[in-house]
Image (spheres, rainbow, N blue to C red):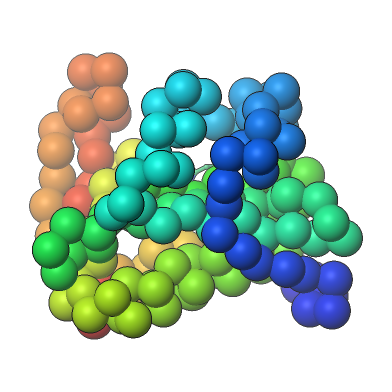
Length: 149
Ligand SMILES: CC(C)(COP(=O)(O)OP(=O)(O)OC[C@H]1O[C@@H](n2cnc3c(N)ncnc32)[C@H](O)[C@@H]1OP(=O)(O)O)[C@@H](O)C(=O)NCCC(=O)NCCS
């Protein structure tokens, strides 16, 4: 677990994204194109957060809200800062945002082989509601999960 006094969480803006732009691929496992990510930040339906530890960005994540349903777009912790609680910390905040926006549920899709992410989502009560077979590059399936609020 991390030292709470060294943590800050705030809305992500383009300057935050630029701060980690060069290290997204190697240090964060980023699977999003930078330009697409940048557009997401200015989408009115989206809420992205960053977690800073000792001033450094260690985790980011976002949801997109359409009507009363929030969709988790991504959650990524910097590789050398995983298993310290940042994933749970940011997901808890994203769920709070969805509740404040009067969402009735949160949905997401996750690779069937991503056990760490599935474990994280199950921790908050997300349940599997569907499967998209061979969704990722025609190979891995996507598990659809929902949390009713
Ligand atoms: C999934 C991910 C976001 C989790 O972030 P994290 O900051 O490591 O998560 P936390 O430290 O809060 O851990 C959450 C849970 O996973 C467990 N966990 C995390 N890393 C683990 C590891 N290497 N081994 C065993 N358990 C682990 C924690 O113990 C915790 O479990 P608990 O609720 O039983 O205590 C992170 O692994 C990641 O960035 N993965 C790549 C991107 C990705 O796949 N994102 C999800 C799809 S969008």
